[in-house]
Image (cartoon, rainbow, N blue to C red; front, side, top):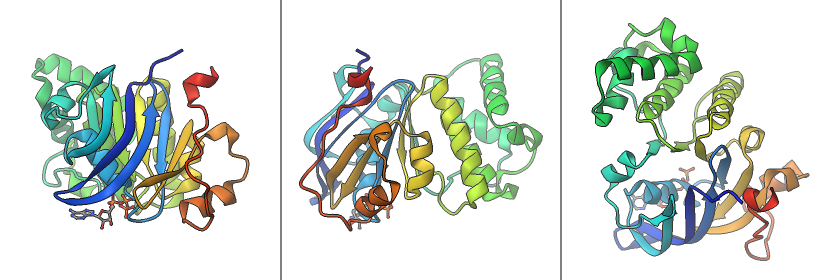
Length: 255
Ligand SMILES: Nc1ncnc2c1ncn2[C@@H]1O[C@H](COP(=O)(O)OP(=O)(O)OP(=O)(O)O)[C@@H](O)[C@H]1O
């Protein structure tokens, strides 16, 4: 059985003394996508931030690559292979596309030739970025900036990639393009934790979905067991009462 790369168990977290996540558990496996779904304010971003080391763990545990990382500093988590693309396409708008990518790989402290090779890999994944490599990032479209933000995260050579609403503010055709790149990244063996409001787009690429509401899990299921998308959307909107977390087997338990 494949071991999860990320194993979040009974997580409680929040902001200072304000607790907004009470009991959240999910796993992410290499070469798989786990989608965290749920309505606005349900605690998805806060959970991601806790995994990245930006919010304190007040209860439960975060396991990564077989070790507890609850108290590991955020920059050490990056070094350990955890990359986090925050919501809102945070790129350096004045810098060129190429410089943005190089900044993403800066923390590795590798030689220029290695950075060149890493940039090339990103350009293979996102050919449109190669075309625009000399342009300032601020001149790119919203979708292209999202791809650049993902490319920047990949430059840090992650094993776990966390994406917070990559579809945010994008037209449906661009969302499909971004998701097809996410699918390509998972095929390359990356473990991906995807936070999304766009339920349909998320289930296209996800292997497992975990739905949060008011800081708790209301549904946890392999995607191939979900046969009613409308019901899933209702659960995500908090419109369907749930009898507590449905802890279906995680992907690895089925293989
Ligand atoms: N800096 C903060 N200080 C205090 N409370 C916060 C802070 N940021 C978010 N919250 C609160 O935490 C709760 C969970 O927010 P979170 O951003 O995790 O939700 P979300 O599921 O990601 O929703 P969205 O899709 O709107 O981003 C919300 O009630 C929100 O108001």
